[in-house]
Amino acid sequence: MSTLKVTNIQATGETASRAVSGVAAAWVNYKGTATNSVRDSFNVGSVTDNGNGDYSVNFTNNMANANYMITGTGEQLTGNPIIEIVKDYSNAYTASVARIAAVQNSTRGDSVYVNFSTHGDLA
Image (cartoon, rainbow, N blue to C red; front, side):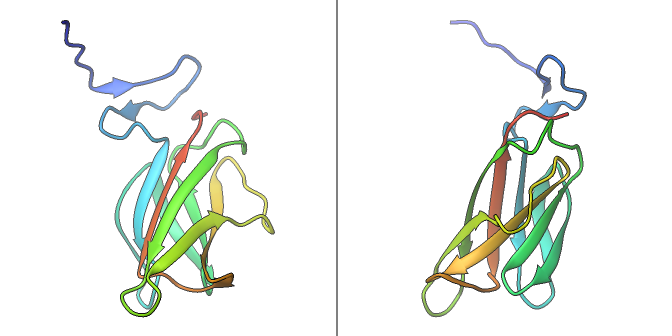
């Protein structure tokens, strides 16, 4: 069996490369309550708190278009701990920003842990 060792992965046509350990186009672990802060991330420049359970994830390197997919989870330390991180369809995605919502029992709310990732082509 052969071993392939690379430092970065770059798809044909992409201008930005991805670290091998971060095959998602972007991901972030974010504190979405009180003093909002990014704990760790890849290809995320910042996260903007737009209000209760409403966040904008700002990419360092843009996506190729707005047709990327997202995955996310959230967590509270008390009460019902399961929070969904979903695409905020009331605000259009762009190649540079993903607008997401933290939802618990059909209601938006801030999340102690916001874990978000996206897959798609980089610009």
